Length: 319
Image (cartoon, rainbow, N blue to C red; front, side, top):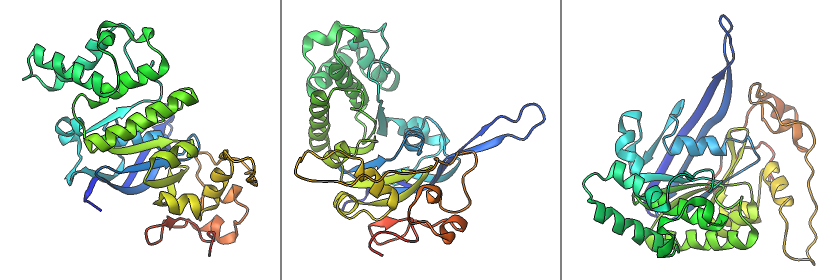
């Protein structure tokens, strides 16, 4: 495998809330000690329930917010606030809602030209115009769309515009934050195929964030399962999907529909409440909902361990 384009080590993000005038603010640990590597041309999928820290990870990696602890690097260069301006071109993001992420008052040509005007001041207007039309063709947008407004497009077309905007600065890494969850199923497949084609053609590296495991299985190379801000299982796609080891991963997979009427699946229904991020339990955060939990799980937090296929569980599937 080639060297990592995107590497993270011990990333954490803590938010302080409340406190008032004299009170002490409370901490929300949205992200805790997350580490991973993604090689050029590969896709790491980050999956988990709402509130598990997926979108917080996206904001940190795209330099929208700084990490509270830990570090990450792009092509071996550590990302620090002082280097943000020079490294932001390398990482771009595609958001979940294509309409909400596009300025309704701007024509498509202006939306796509804006990153070049801000970050490529040496380019002439004609050169920027040529680049805009080149990228529009790359994502399957017709030339006559150039002067239209976002409300004149379907959801799938808007997401193509959002992808085109992310590609304008020729990034090495794309963070895809639920990029197809707001689209119809037929359109989802078109956008996923486009993303895979762009990855092969441009050598892009993807951090793909999703709650839909059927989509993840179609596009990813490696998987990281998160629960309440922590990674609880990581590994290659085949390892995680065919031989899941963490009880939480088993529960997620059991809830994923299978397009085979002859295949029977037993749904694992989780009981108990999701712990509050303001008061994370001392031991394993999943212990209150886990059917395998024992006293050790409630008193001690398991580390993410393993050779390639890693799991944070004292009593994983398969021993």
